[in-house]
Amino acid sequence: MLSPEHNELLTRVGPDAPMGEFLREYWVPACRSAKLEVDGAPERVRLFGENFVAFRATDGRVGFMQEACPHRCASLALARNEAGGLRCIFHGWKFSVDGKCVDAPTELRAGRERFAAGVLVRSHPTHEAGGLVWVYLGKNKASPPRFPDFEFTSLPDDQVSPRRGIIHCNWMQGLEALLDSAHVSFLHASNIGSSAGRQVFKVESDYMLDNTAPTFEVVAKPYGFREGALREQANGRCYARIREVALPFFSFIPATPGGPALACCSIPIDDEWTAQWYIGFNAHGPMPVDRTGIYGSDSGDPDFFNSDMGNRDNLWHQDREAMKRGHWSGIVGRGNAYEDFAVQESMGPIVDRSKQHLGRCDLVILRARSMLLRAIEAYKAEGKISFAGEDVDFGKIRAISFAYPRGEDWKEIDAFNPPSLEVA
Image (cartoon, rainbow, N blue to C red; front, side):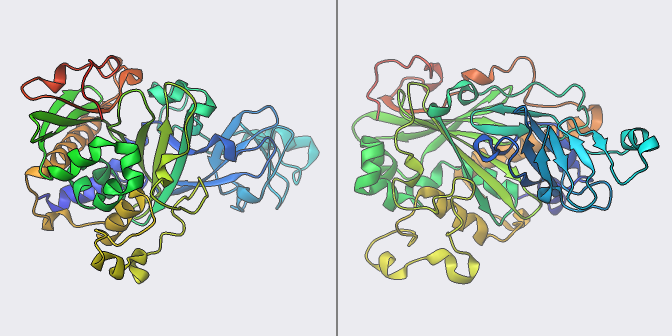
């Protein structure tokens, strides 16, 4: 059980909220790089309860600034993107990638340059990697913190496939769903056990479905923690799903060594809406057909792949007849993300965690909540940015799954050089 006060602390992400201020000190995905064309339309982006625009200027650089023109607050999403900056269509004021007002043509020519120099525009540093535009919204814009150079951020474009879901719930609900290894044996049972699921997971499908109560072991890491969800098998082996949690946003989903992998993150749009990024990547070669849709269809829009998901009013298109025929969730012809999203939204925009009755299977959820609360206190007390110190090697974070002889220690296995095991 979490106190109402701590629940508020974890979930509120506006500019004046402690968690909102803390989370702004990390680089976050804002949009796909491919969405921004040179001198093309600006992209509206809402993060942490504030509205911005992203755009690619004539020289290819990406700008990221407040959506409201500082003159009369017209939307810069309507602006002309030309000759190295955005020009507001209302009065023609122009803003550079660096966030400077470089022209105010409604002012007298004699004092125009001096006037423009005094116009304040809120802009933020950007970085492109892993097919994404990342932005830093924190206080130290002149010297941002180190970028989290995860393995997928250094791969060629054909080896990375980022996709965004948008869900009507708080970011913590999104994050906690990404940390939960126990639910896969239930919520996703029909997908995992289907012919399509078995093509992906092979014998792992049986491992997950035969033992629905894994034991959990957690190893603290400077970036968060490493979690082992261990399922004893009747054949004398143990099936391990080793998740890497890079707080405050990322969960690396366990995958068979040598194949495609998946990194997920839960990024606050505002208190009640979340951008859930699914970043498929393959360190060993080009990405195969995107596996996020292997169980069925999605909207086809990588910027909002679940736009056809439904909502509370139609119970996310749950099919009760299919459930009578044996489908577990009733969310038929959809990928695991749709099932996760429906459950997350069903809790309400901001779930009251003081009413939850947690069990042994929620160990990882409790660990994440505790670590985030401590990190907020450290930030408030001394300005410390947790989980991103110089001792963190982001590029060495890799989640794997495998079966191994019972009695061996999963913690001794190197994810980048796994031993010859009976891998799924």
